[in-house]
Amino acid sequence: MHERGMLIVLSGPSGVGKGTVRQAMLADDFRDFQYSVSMTTRKPRPGEQDGVDYYFRTKEQFEAEIAAGQMLEYAKYVDNYYGTPVKYVNKTLDSGRDVLLEIEVKGAMQVREKCPDGVFIFLTPPDLMELKHRLIGRGTDSADVINKRVKQAAEEIKMMENYDYAVVNDEVPKACKRIERIIESEHLRVPRVIDKYRNMVQ
Ligand code: 5GP
Image (tube, rainbow, N blue to C red; front, side, top):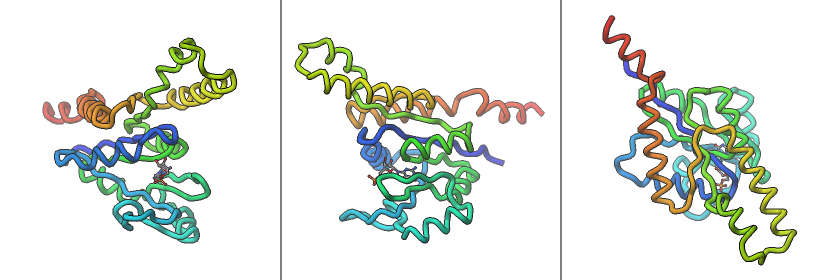
């Protein structure tokens, strides 16, 4: 029997570039994971294909999937449903391959509850770290802007607390590399490999 695959959850605040990073990771021929195509009720954008970018469904269809227990997680985001069909994820993990989800934060927290052994990666905007410099910098921002930025940063850091890794999305190729290294290292963690070694000596 082979090892079960690992569930990798890429999430983060809206506008941080999760989709761009995901696409860049998928474009790598040597990638070693499968992407779980999400389901949504939003309309396709030009060039988007059903079954490739998303499974585009009506609200009624989506709600029927929820009622039938077919969603690993789902959330409403800007008036549309987004969710992860559970079947593909389980089938792929059972076959020993890793699965990548790229989802918003509410959905990621549902997955954390259901799959605590997943790897939870929080993508952060580069300016989250630069905030302090900006604030004490030349003093060009108005008090209002500063307050808003601090509040937003505090919210983002609060979200980050629920994740295993924080990856800065300063440049997309660099962010991808960091995520690839996380995946590689996670595969070497003792709780993930110990059974294999135990079986060997039995
Ligand atoms: P967009 O409409 O720009 O493709 O995606 C909007 C947001 O929905 C993004 O933050 C994206 O990460 C998130 N999203 C995409 N698929 C899923 C999903 O299956 N579940 C959840 N919870 N969020 C998703």
